[in-house]
Image (tube, rainbow, N blue to C red):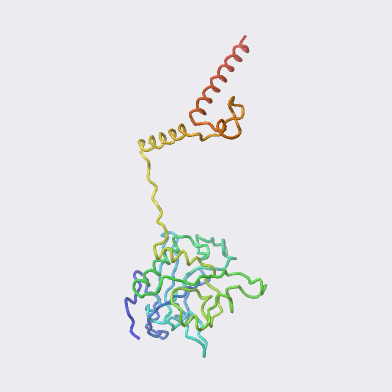
Amino acid sequence: MARTGPQKIPGASQAYFYGNGQYSGSAMEVNCGVVHTTEGRTVPSYNNGAMAPTVTGLPDFKAKKIRWYQHYDVDESARALANKLGGVETNTANTFQIELVGTCDDKYKTGWSGKKAGVDYLHWPTAPDWALAEVAWLVKWLNTNHGIPLTGVRDWLAYGKDSRRPGVTPASYGASPARMSHAAWRNFKGWCGHQHVPENDHGDPGNLDFARVLAHATGSNPPEEDDVALSSSDIEKVADAVVLRMLSKDAFPAPTDAADYKPTGPGSTWSGRTVFRDLITRVRRISADTAAIRKKLGA
């Protein structure tokens, strides 16, 4: 099968490329992607390629970027999935595989062996938006250049204990509700996680927010607006508009000690003009009373 389209990912390091060695894979045309988490804080050795994915993404916290390391050509089978005899093909089923350095285990949600999440490593279910946007860049590039659909499975199960099997395995592991049937896998196109692939029992990448990744890739996330400083003239216009609105409408509840107060209907609300007039009257009255008190105290 011919390898169509660019085979090297722009900007990806080829320092750990295994496609031209003893673990080189089979040619294919990718149409789906599988996401893994390494459950570690550094790029793994993958047994020198024996268990490598297509690419590994290492977060660069200072630059807020993901550094991609490519291990196989895009249209070359990787080796990060289990593939049992007599079942369905997994690694060679037109599958592009991403390993994200970090964890999906909630016990490392905030800290891990003295390291801090979001500073020293990523807990991917709570990954910052910049990291999801970086994954989306690769997902979009694969869609543009290789046609992997910008769609994904609906359910990404959390990496946690299954209440039906307490103390046994995480809910996303083994024969979880998320695991595809052989038939569903054969027909699958788009994006899923290791927890969804048949003949496998791993539960990564947990409840990764892949919907957000796809929203970035499709451009359906509204762009963040830059803050714009208002000029003095703009501020005056806004203030004038607010004052005019306040003065022209009965926008305030009337005080219950008002001479014409009524709980409902006319007399139950005051305009801003009336509020200001009453406020000025009260201030003047307080000022007069204070002056009289001072005069008596002085005498």
